[in-house]
Length: 205
Ligand code: HEM
Image 1 (cartoon, helix red, strand yellow):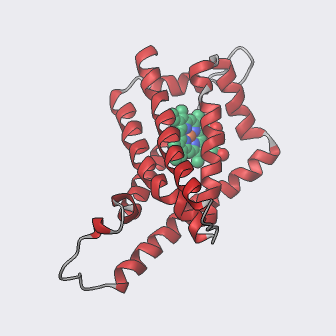
Image 2: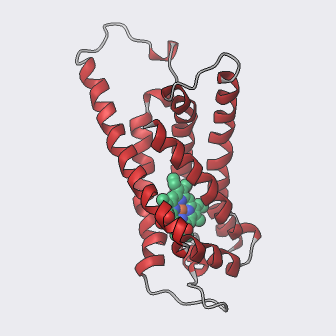
Image 3: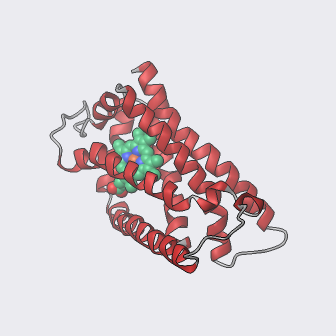
């Protein structure tokens, strides 16, 4: 789970950097980025690793949640979980499921369209994914879905980031507090930046 999680975290950084061209680039810049991501051979190979990681992470996560539940079939008579664990850490399965459902909808809207949809081309002859993305983000419910899903992703990362380092055994008295701080900053900044894109396009589209 930790390995696939860390790989997915790396993907988020690359994907966010590309998607930010929706705000500070031209439509042609975004279309060129989308073309590069779907045709450049090394990235294409990495994409298959990405799909496998998403599925592997989800399947292992559900198995782990079931295992945890089975380990304590009868609840404690007195239980105050907030005393020694965060809400995010106790809700990882729910937060993961929300993120996964978001991903299915997201990939249908963009990834499926990019590969198999009938979309026009821009002045450079690249598939005009910008127009598809801009049209999607003119719908308020769709923008709200992104903001909601990015909030869930933020909480998922708030626990997941530092937990991945712990699972890998990368614990150190001086580095662990720093990893926790970086993890917290990452889980706020990255989902917030993703969420700003649809909101910005809704307002300016
Ligand atoms: C504003 C937010 C987002 C926008 C505008 C956006 C846009 C896109 C577009 C246009 C594509 C198809 C072209 C491509 O492969 O690059 C895509 C693919 C994808 N997106 Fe997003 N995305 C956003 C957020 C996210 C988030 C938060 C996640 C993960 C939690 C995600 C996961 C993916 C995945 C896994 C693919 C398929 C990548 C591949 O085939 O290699 N996206 N996205």
